[in-house]
Amino acid sequence: MDQNREDIELFREIAEIIPEAIIVTDREASVVFSNRAACKMVGREPDRQSECSLHDFLWGDSLNSRLNIALYENSLTGQPQSISVKKEDGAELFVKMRTAQWGSFYLLTLQDITREVVLLRSTDLQRREKQAKNTLLERCNSKLVEKQRTLEELLDNLPEALLSVSEAFVIEAQNQAAAKFKPKGLARKCHEYLGYNEPCPGCPARDGFALLEDVKKIHTINDRYITESISASHFGTGGMLLFRDTTRQIKLIEQIRYQQQALTEKNNILKLLSDFTNFVQKENKIKAVVDCFWKSFLPLLQDAAALLLINDIRPGNLWLADGQGVTDEDLMKVSRAYLSRDMQSLYQEALAEDFLPWPTTSQILLYRKDRTLAGLLLLQGAFTSPEAKEIIDLFSEPLGTYIDNRLLTRKLEEKANTDPLTGLYNRGYLEQAILEETEKRHKLNLEFSVVVADVNQLKKANDHYGHEAGDRLILKVSQLLRQASREIDIVARTGGDEFVILLPDTTEKNALHFTERLGREVFGDCCIKVGEHETFPVSVSLGAAGSDLQPPEELTKAADRAMYEAKEDFYRDKERYR
Image (cartoon, rainbow, N blue to C red):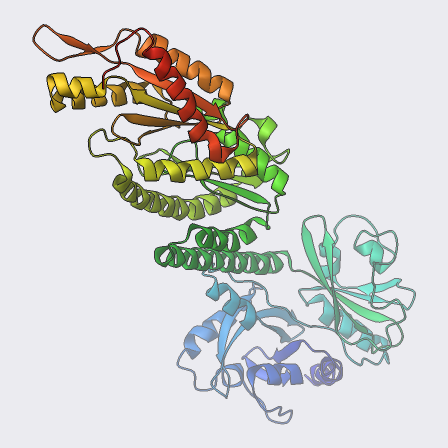
């Protein structure tokens, strides 16, 4: 027994300089010795003179003492046990306890795993992780061989890999855990222990160990993270190195950070979407809505260059063409292609690659509620990832809904610009359309033409067969003109017997071909029934003029003059009715 007491005294000197929490008990679970780290961990005042039971030392008056004693007894089998301790200040401490037999005594090492338990609880992973222990040896004096043997015996009971190295980084000693940590290959120096041929990059001990105290460095080896704690040796020169595999802990932290970042990004997207949705519900000006769309949407796609074309209620016309990071030349090229005769007549919804502004361009079609095309959004780049597609869908949908609602409103307003008899557009609407085509010609260099049609012998039909016959004649002419025109053309009734057809993207030569076809195929042998056995011929005099040969503001007058010349030709072999 005396010899045991001497071992205790010798061990006491060594254990007091070790930051590892250590308790020595006898076989009756009475505390023979506890170092400062153990007292500090459980919140007890250090008392070397008086002995107490392990129960009193760890749990005091805890109601769970029986459960905890059972765990302690299980730990005597050599298996580590996790216990909870109520500190004197009421805080709950989670400890992993390992027990090893040391002569006639038991050596208990305590590891504080409170942070790890709290971390795992907060992420609902329900897994216990080893908590960081800074178990470096402090201030050791190499006095006796017996002390060295006792120290080595103590170190072999530590769960982490521990190396003692010289100033030249040569490994002088290592515990059993270090051998298990690197089971294959011999290492003469500490960097070789980690698989490096040269000293570790950025080694904190490159200039010596003397001023180091628990400096940490993380190594990435294959797919593992190794945390190295470095401190000066208290047994002489050199240092003490403690290695711990922290792969699971670091990956868990990275996963939590990734989830937090993803949540932050989604919250930002939802806020921008909410702000944009609220704005479009209050704003009537299309340009202001598009500017808000750019501001909310493009930052989420790394501020990619973009171009937006929005259809007008009139086919073949644009309500708005706008872009970000786009030259005026590209904007004009894309707009021309979108409004071209081929594009509009073939009902294509996507532009050919030759007309796209960037080598890699994403085309997003904006639809109205009836699935007709509302516009086209072009983005520089290929946004094929699910995240990018989700962002595009989230923001393009409210934009398409806004455009649809505004176009419906404009459609209702358009009804005020129609002729009550024929349903064709009236003079006011035609004049506005000509102004729009004139502006398109200046901006996009798209020519347009005007065709004037005057009904022949309308007064004769009214006088001989009544105004009902005259109305049928007007309705027949309007029907034939509308059927012969394209969807993008504007057919308007500008007077009692006069009609005007606006032909976008049409030269004067093509307009003349159109009038020839009208006279030959449409009105060539056409007539209306005015009596039981009598018909009346339907014919019109036509004139055309194009902006490629005439000033835009003179087109209607030029076409009108051509129409009167055609009317004179009509009456050369017919009796003129006054």
